[in-house]
Length: 170
Figure (cartoon, rainbow, N blue to C red):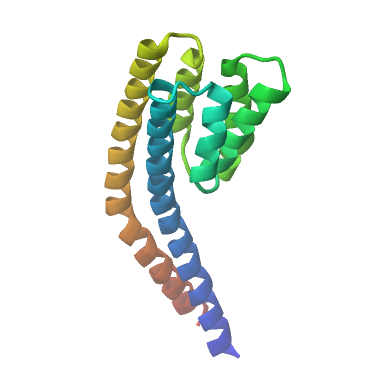
């Protein structure tokens, strides 16, 4: 009976360590997807001269959750309601944000991007997208450094915590 309990404790603590480590990797994956989505948005706007709602709909079909949901929600809000692109972007971000692995720093960057969305001519809009991509690139580098630094440590800490608890209980 003690052996089964010890194995359950070890499995649970190891699983917690793996999940925390996975969240670091998931954040990086979502940041990369967001950068790709913004690059696609730039291409649709600049070279396809596609309206914002239509470009967002196309982008939502190219990506997976949560980026897909963000752009789909944004497109729907632009079509269904008489609100500005800024308001639609902010509402869409707030709806999907709890479903992402991204942090508040990324939210601030994307909210700042939303401030200028749909307000400028094509060249200015392109510059705003490039600026946002630069910020996201910096955040991605920081997230990668954190993942490399803490990813293995958190996994090991999960296993070692389980072993420590087992030793104390036995």
